[in-house]
Amino acid sequence: MKCQKNDFELVKAAVYNSIGVGRANATTREELTARTGYKDRRVRDAIEDLRHDRVILSIGRGYYIPETTPQGRQEAAIWVRMQNSRMRSIKAATMAAQRFAGMGNKQVAGQMEMFE
View 1 (cartoon, rainbow, N blue to C red):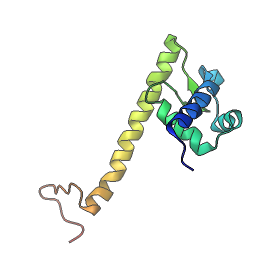
View 2 (view 1 turned 180 degrees about the vertical axis):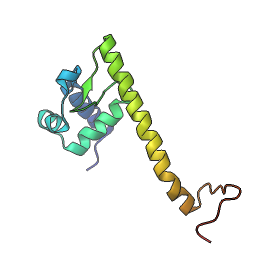
View 3 (view 1 turned 90 degrees about the horizontal axis):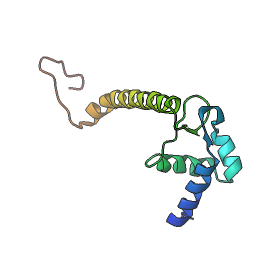
């Protein structure tokens, strides 16, 4: 049975209220599933959705809400750099598959064609 929008709002509220504040209080997904009673997939979906509007970091062990201090802001900046690095890596990894699939196939002048 699909979860209704209002039900998912309850899931998100339960997950958010179970996440610790400050890196020292990081909460693992296993802890979140135990505290909320929701399955791991629902917890991950809730965190993904919550991150659209709220700051939830995961540096090291577990998820946490950063403190509103210079240290918390520095942790958020570190997390942003980590995510930007992941985005660049994912983009680079998809380029070969895109070329293979003929998506945006841009041949570089003088480059030899591999799949003739």
